[in-house]
Length: 599
Picture 1 (cartoon, rainbow, N blue to C red):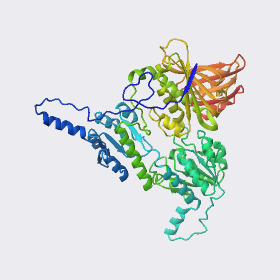
Picture 2: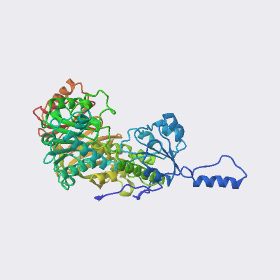
Picture 3: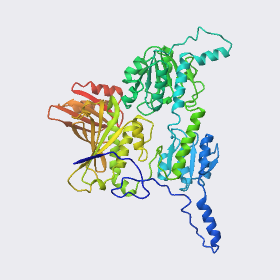
Picture 4: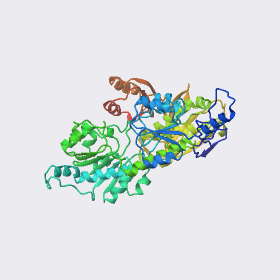
């Protein structure tokens, strides 16, 4: 017996009843909890003081420049203290008098800031996207919501990408510097036309898709690579989604728009550049770390890369003697992607609205940390929360292509009735596991549905009602991703979806099924999955290769269909094997396919 539904994540002022599916997040006012230690006879005076407190506005501290439009919006609801260039100690001193704090990237909001706020600080707003300057763990521990402004910069970043692309094609920066030095070198700065050239957009999110739209308007042929983007969204603007190797090998221009994650760090390196057309031109307005900068210098020197236009760098600002910045075929700008008047006003309004809404107790779609979960619920579901995120993370790493991740089905097997088990936290963690490894978005209980919808991902839930004791919340969780190709064909179930299934054993997450193969392995560290012909000696051969590489094996198990038929070997490792070691494993005759996965 199964029931499928799609739930929105909302909150109520009180803990939910078993059948309640509608909650509303509510922050207590810092003024309503005031009490008096001294008893006085002057009743009227005491009443006036209390009334003044009840009528007082919250205080918002702004520590870095914010657009006037945002400040005006804040002033309609709160007292605004604009104190710029505060030292860490000055910030800690002022914070106990503030209900909200708005920062950009220059202010470090450390654990000490939250501790010194003595519980009064209710929301931190980051005017921009990145929140690496805010201690999220400390914020959550102290019941403080953190919000950011992720959408207002999109058009500005896309326009800057196009500006760099066109400037690079015509050597505008170099020609300008030449003329200003008194030279007139028309023959030296002959450019290339954009019309009919192929642009590969790597990362087809908000900014990447806007760059593609504008490049189409310039007459360029646009292709894109993003294994997690819906194909129909790309087709709607005349863009074809292709594999990474095809994108970089066929492009005349490459524009980078992916987030910086472990998977994309130095994604553009010597090996990648060697596969490109000679004379390719590269634009980066994403993150500096996605390019191996020393490798790019070598590619520029060899002529593989004709020109590069860079707005971001691994180290910002880059060293003054940087060979990359000083290279004659490089245009460099100081991280100006969001630096337009309109974008700055947009960021100011977006963060002001989010902060005011949070102070009013409203749900914030741009929240990047989760509200407090009732202790008894968290205690019971804690191991299943870990399992849910790891299953999502495992499933998305198995995706290789197709139409992008659009349809995810989650099945919960339990002996409890629908009213006795609230799975929204588990659903949010599966969403987190699917989205975070391939984006720079932070997903939690507050923004999970919003984030999935933005990315065109529909998540449905199915309850599988089992006979048995309801003492255990869940027997297993199963995650299926439909209409995609897989890096590991054995992960495809008989019905055609990537399927992974897990359960909690001894309060630890265990993987119990991949595709149609049953396994039983702890989901800790990293995994190597191998599909092989079931025969003696396989564990020894793989173990020897890993041992030679000093890679510690935590476990090995084999799940098979029948003796001497196909089997899946699952290997847990404490370290990431080298590419050479993985290549050697793949060359073992009986191994038909393999994949390395980080959990």
